[in-house]
Length: 101
Length: 249
Image 1 (tube, rainbow over the protein chains, first blue to last red):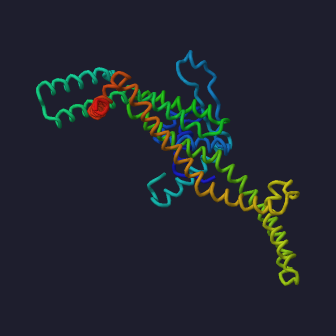
Image 2 (image 1 turned 180 degrees about the horizontal axis):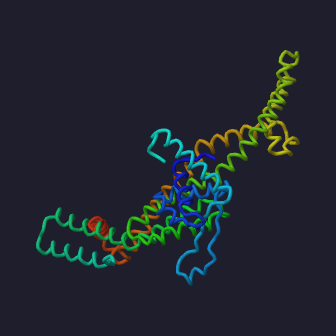
């Protein structure tokens, strides 16, 4: 799968919140991505098996809002995400030797 | 802070207009006042019902998606807009961004599958056609032109046989006509129907939403009739007078 800059940002958001389930709006806040960019990306990561998603089991009327779909990195996705982010860090390290520890 | 109600703006705009008429302000000033009032009205309405408009935009664009994915994605997008809790233009801009996502997903889910299916068919048909054409090429120097012609026609109509297996039993002229029509149809769909359909969906959604969401709820039927009277009153009156004059003579 091609890893774009936006994909890396989303993966980084998941890595920054390990073990946490995130839903669309919080991801948009963490990453600063627009909804139009974020949701197709999430669908692609889901389809490729990088993410797992589950629907919140709530009574929408009781909580007064729509049900949410929570995403988290899958086991495979976590390894790939670390690789993708590491690759970028290595690239930056080569560009700016000594700046990144 | 709650947005001022559109009816307050309407009342203020009408009062100002009446005052301007009583005072005898010039036509330009009067028009300027009314235009300002209408723009303020629209802005107030957008501020009040921006979130509602955004949800409707999401509902409309979601229709492009396949049914299997539609409900889940609509729930997710509605939650995004409602959780943001914003008013005015912001949710509408978020909805516009989501509309872009919907188009991209619709392309991925619908068009790619459709294109892959037909490309596969076209590929199979072309392959079969090439295999069939090989003997025809080999017999290029054959002494019987009629035989070569039959091979050529068979090669051209073979894709039809692949797509519709029962076509082998059809008369030759019908098969040739169908093959020609199919090619013309595919050309027309690719060149005209798909772009025209997509353009008409986008244009009619945007125009329809703008009209449906703005005019009636902003003005209400009573004020709509007054606006019509204001915009076209002189014209209507002139027509009625002319009709009366004609009837009199």
